[in-house]
Amino acid sequence: MLFTTDRVAFEFHQGTAPLLLSFPHVGTYVPPCVAERLNDEARHVPDTDWHLPRLYAFAKALGASTLVATHSRYVVDLNRPPDGASLYPGQNVTGLCPVDSFDDTPLYRSPELLPDAAEIDQRRAAIWQPYHDQLRAELDRIKAQHGVALLWDAHSIRSVLPRFFEGTLPDLNLGTNLGASCAPALGERLLHTAQQAAEDGYTSVLNGRFTGGYITRHYGQPASQVHAVQLEMTQSSYMQEALPFDYLPERADKVQPHLEKLLNTMLEFAASTQQR
Image (cartoon, rainbow, N blue to C red):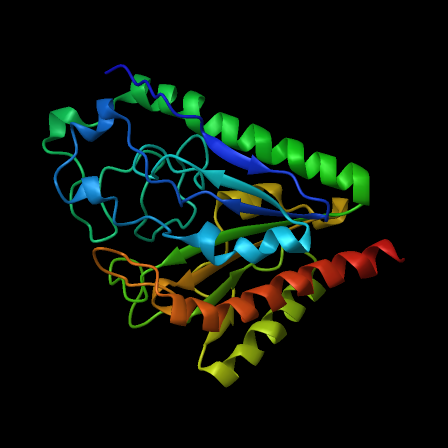
């Protein structure tokens, strides 16, 4: 089937600090050529990382650049390798162009409506590639200007998802590809900062169930002074996890200061690197 879209792949804001925030899973747009084939549940795009640009709105005041996806991950997942290879071999995962939900239910009304190889190529060219081209260009610009580039890949997820993990997920899940995507010292500083949020009831972990997706793993090159970190946080920390997926300001206002401390920890690390 022919894939077409009338929306740009991303919205971009260029900042002044050596920090880029990537939001690959916040998009909700599904072009008609895909939406007409999805079932009723899938049209609600429940596996979206809802409201994260609003939650991180303070980041622009810190001077951060932001890259915000527009299309749903059901169209193409920007945090998967372009060849669709599994990031967690042996574990249950969703693909580059998902065909099932986080609840392990079909997205499409019937098997014959699934995207074929040609359509997957078209989706990748129209949405995945432009997003990653912009991500790469901005990291290169930041590195050239500041001598160091920081990438914060922002995600959120339902706190209980039996398909992917047992029990309840910690609130703040930091991922550094087991220490390979950023300087180990930065990962430890971030964990220390996250652990301080325990005073407000938030739990945290470094490289637990989520160690970072394609973006973190691909772009993090600490030997070249490009440091990438993923934060997968529980949606219960700031929003309603079920329909209608409302933003809950009282909860969000409580967790936002801790997110700001984490980003400031990133910037403090960059400053210490630049002073060497």
